[in-house]
Image (cartoon, rainbow, N blue to C red; front, side, top):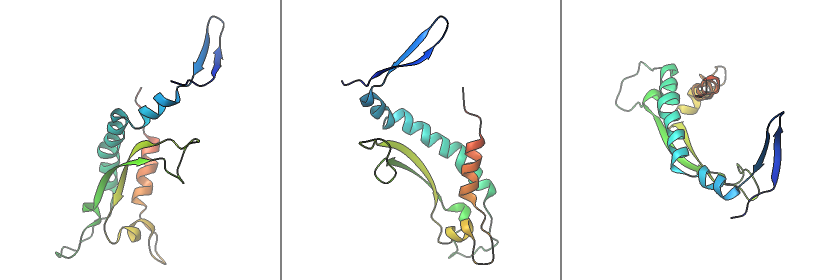
Length: 135
């Protein structure tokens, strides 16, 4: 086990706090089941319901038309491969994506020439960033 350099991170009146990084343990946590479950929980229980609540609903009901609101998918992923890498060498980490696979998802999100999109996924990300973090 190779530990990083020991650094003083806080000096108080009655206490000193030193920190020594263990890169192998950080990397193990980054791909572990606890983090994967936490990411999945946020997407399924917070992001998905919010995205569905702000999704536009089409009045079209023929069998060939797939509704935007019915086309969300949740996907567990392993990230950290270039170009979205962190560290040197890049550190792999788990994540969860919310995506919409409707053929017209890009039009709903970004709009067409002359019309603005609904930014459903963008607004969902904004919503997640404003939520209070659990203590």
